[in-house]
Image (cartoon, protein in one colour):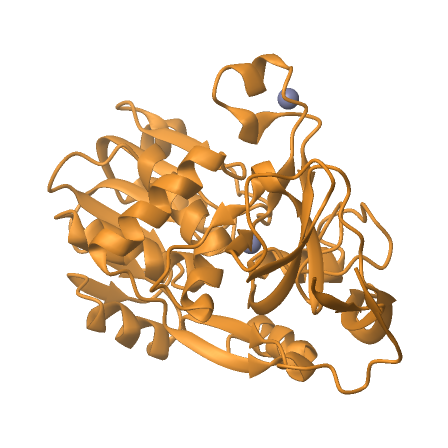
Length: 348
Ligand SMILES: [Zn+2]
Ligand SMILES: [Zn+2]
């Protein structure tokens, strides 16, 4: 038996400049195949800004953002059997797919048109509790601290998928444009796998972090790379960098746009940007397989997120700091051990 309170503190999206506000919400009840998770860490992702600032259309008014949530299972839906109470799990961006369409049936569930997303279609991890379908939860390896596991759930997985889609040859040269949460994890994987990594990003702190992580060079965001690149990943949500990044590719190279949102791409010139079999592609969410592979790889490669910790009560400040690039690496919210302001409890 677990004592679960009836209500919990949470942050909800209000749209526009204020972004989020502190509220009390009922603790959600797990549906048939769901588990209820008592969250202890939740990563702060740029997509949370896109959701709360209106770059992405509203899917659920006043949604609780957050899709990098790690915590312990504290209640099971009546059909849930995959986890036991006390197991540590992660809740990621992709939270439901139809399971029947051609994309779902061919291992490309990230392209399911009926997919649902945590912290956009359904309430996420800027709260003390959240539910997730057990089949979309990730088992968190013991030994991986929650604040390290949280950023892997989106920043890590998306970067990993982008790297796979970049088709980098063994020992190849990889360009990384923008060096935030996802990029600094992706760079570590690429370096560990033997790639020569060149980072182009505007922040001096981010360039320092990149060099600390073993990249070959780090220069300004719009700089030409020092060598032609076999592949590049654009993490910055800046469409104006697409021509620059394409022009920096070796012939036959691939540019992967990793973001869910990108400002408009300026006009391209075929000869300068695409001819000689250069490719431009994107990343859309991830499959569960991507996530499971990444968690295995993270343990093997000793992947370390550069975490800037924030108290749960400072979630609004964490989003502000992300918006103005006040930290390098990734922000992670730590939930309080107990909710002393809770009004009443109920035993489930
Ligand atoms: Zn589907
Ligand atoms: Zn994200």
